[in-house]
Length: 186
Image (cartoon, rainbow, N blue to C red; front, side, top):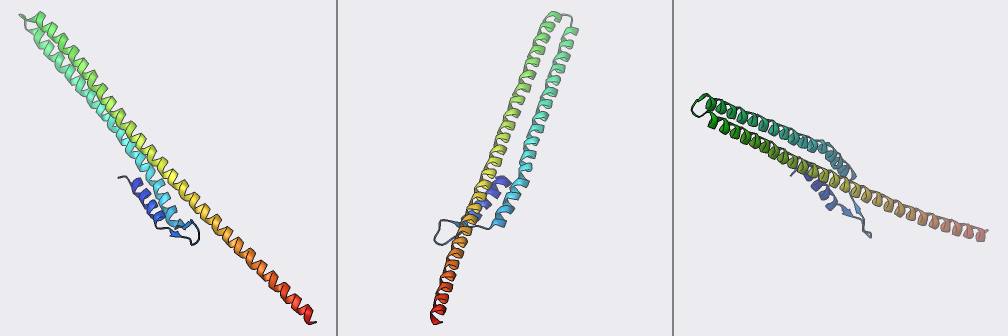
C-alpha cells in the first residue's frame, strides 16, 4: 500500500468521523485535518513519480545487460569459430558450424533484448497507469471534500442569515409595540 493510499484512507476516516448537524443532512468536518492530508498527498505524489523513474532506469539496466550478454554470446561464438577454422581436417564443417552458431547467437541476443524491452515497457506502463490513477483519485477526493466544506459553509451562513432576519423582525415588532404603548400612554 502506498503512502498516497494511506493518506486517502485517513481522509475517509476524517469524513467518517464528521459530526452530523442536527436537523440537516450536513456534517461538520475538521477542515485543518483535511487540508493537512491534502498537502501530504501532494507531497507524496512526487515520490510515486520517483518510483516510476526508478522502474525506467531499471529497464535501461536490463537492456544494457541484455546487450552485454548478446555481445558475450557473439564473442564466444566467434572464438569457437576461429578454433574450428584452425583445425585443417574439419575447416569447411567448422566454417559452416561457426556461421550457424553466430546466426543463432545474434538471433538469441536480439530476442533477449526485445523481451527485456517489452518487459520493461510493460512495467513502466503499469507504474504510470497506477500513478495516474492515484493522482486522479486524490484530486477527486480533494474536490469532493472542498465541495462538502463549501456546502457546509453556505448552509451555515444561510442559517445565520435566517436567524438574524427573524431576530431583527422580532426587535422591530417589539419596538413598534413599545412605541404604540407609549403613544397610547400619552
